[in-house]
Image (cartoon, rainbow, N blue to C red; front, top):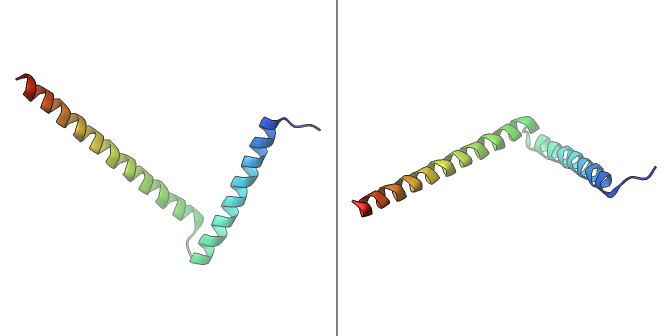
Length: 73
């Protein structure tokens, strides 16, 4: 059975991801934190960072719009 390079990459990626999950789970278990709780915390932090970045982008856009209106007026 011959596998294409593309298929081998997918298999390698899946095996690597599984190994990382097993290793992370073991390390978190030693630290006393369940894996899914930690992943949930990471997801919430990521969402907060994205939300803050969007808020800053809107603030900058609003400031630029006000500056343009003041220069025109």
